[in-house]
Length: 468
Image (tube, rainbow, N blue to C red; front, side, top):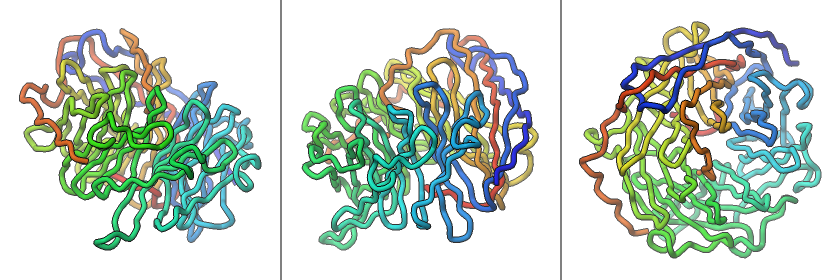
């Protein structure tokens, strides 16, 4: 049973004029906007990803957990409201034969459906829903496939993208027995439109990467079909590039791999490829950021020491979106005492320097007030015309709620949003002392970002991927 009512939640954050460079982002008038609030079942609920379909509608995927049951939820939004024409109430719910299902990512397909990546019990899983939110019988078996690579223990895929031919490329972590016992590996799979493994990708559709013992976290595609994969171990990140047929790209790094030393326990949370082939990877709290050139050489690395920080230790970045080839929007969470609040920040990379300007770090309106609450972004998407949608969850310490919000960025100078994605032996270059310090600078008009159309779903407790 789905119950709903409308509420208006608006939050505006204003920065001083010297926080943003001239002519970048301007002011949008604040007007209340209705927002749906509904309940599915009593249980833990969180969105994990958000994407745009061909018509500009927002598609969010996530999970709800009740007792021993864990199911997948896909929601479709138009103008911040649930689209009632989709699956009856704007929501599609998927359960794979009563198993514990996890969804971490989704991509819209050319036929109007959606492809979902995740896991079911101890197997990777891909699920295809048609344009009406119903399992697509043309994909796999009754709309889904389960993949258990030989000799590798797996749980769930963590990242998904579609190439120009409509093939799904997904990445997840695995464990296998090596000389020294169990070792982490990265598993890359490519699947055809009918759900079969692609025999032209590393001969059987599955590629196992064991660079630096890293576990697969994120994947992105370059315009020429090359596949960029990011993974992390305890104290290293590994960025690998594969050719379209699954071979290691010898023109990138050393044997197709760049390894980057990071602080112990630093997870790789986001990977993005710009229109000119620059590869950004970011993760950790405080954030560590690297920008690689097309050949894998390190253009810039920041955040490995306290004196080189790009963000404060109270900020965790979960996703990155290229707005143009020199500017990114980072989303995630920031900390205020015992609270975690929504974060949106602009990162400028110009003249080999990195500048971070904190645009939003606050509770999302009076409805979210209270000590110990957390508002966490898990994914974001930019629509190319000034709107950014963020999906994640909110928790008050007892219950987790679905969180979906959009904000408008009025662009005085419109970015050229042409980026292709929003995922062993080379030592990274030492960061230059000339890097700009954290916080941003430059004269110009103040930035106002309007947070609006916030979705909150009552529930309890847990999300299905690692949280900041």
